[in-house]
Length: 479
Image (cartoon, rainbow, N blue to C red; front, side, top):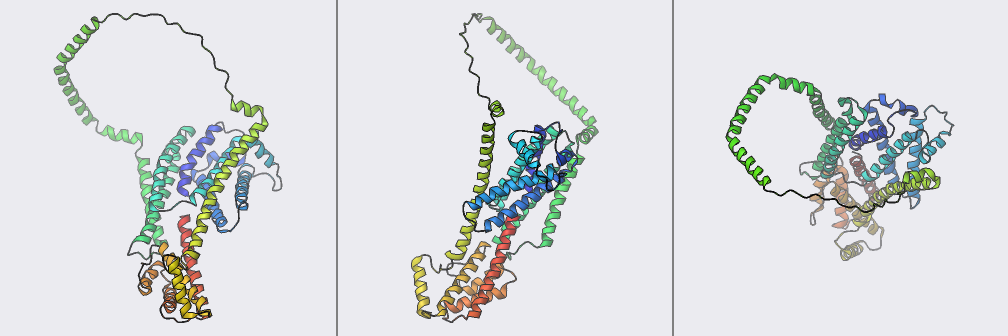
């Protein structure tokens, strides 16, 4: 999130200055924004993006049906834009004064006073929501984060260059977003790599990165970027010219030697060049002169005046309202589509976790029926049958949670051997996993009944493991 904010802000600020270069008539806080530190803009946008991410994640976890979910999403986009406009553009207005709504709507549809600032906030808010919708459906593997970083490097170079040319700010001030991008970009790549190794390495415990190691990673990244920024601040054009000037005697000697070498080469090549020049002159003298004539041109028909869309929108209010409304609806639909796709993926994963492996004692329905028949022969139509099925479901779901962390169970691996992998997948829960494995072996191999108290304990154990896994997935998504 921080990496994307760092490459987007230079584009947004440069565009705002382009559409409002005189900086007159701007409302409230944006009028004084030129004196703000670039870090203030970054923190505001980053915090807003994180809040949108959290809101979208909570919305995806709710089972809200179509179209209420889409309408709620569009309402959230509109409300957040109005809140942003109220806080940044009209902070001095009384709390119950809603006259600013007319000013905002007039700026959007009629291009009234302050329309540049309103459009800037509208585009910024829509971009943040669009990035939230895309980011929640994106894989956070090391490869995908690396691709995003490489693309962001190109975008941040272009954006910071445009910002420097548009604002005329000092180079060091304009490059603040560049250093912010590299700081958070390198940190994101490092975290993605650590997370990948934690899941795939055989010697890893599979746990979350400890806070001391995370702080060590942050300090290392800050040190690397800080040294690069200091070197960029140190090696200015004047310093480079001074360093080059120290070697001026050497450059004079090398220049004199190069001049002597070129003079000798030219002396050897002079006869050949004179011969080529004489041959070209003789060939040109033998050519006949080119006859010139007049060319008649027909009548030129001027094309009819093309339709000016801007003039049409200025002359007809209805067309202007329709076009602006259609554009906003398209953007809202795109954001709702990405959020809906993310929600469908989350629901599918939850359903797979709850059902697909719960009764997947075999590889196909025949195997499942065979295993159910075996349980029926052992327990009959007694409460022990349902308890045995529940225990096998719980064990299968825990195995799937461990597989998502990189500790999958082999096709013919005994539960006792797989217990070591479960301990690595969920460090600190050895007693819980041992109790679950023992209960599974009792119903699967020993035909021993599970009491109601034991089943309740196993369900609580599974809920705790599921919460740990869900918390880890949320941290991975937000990081």
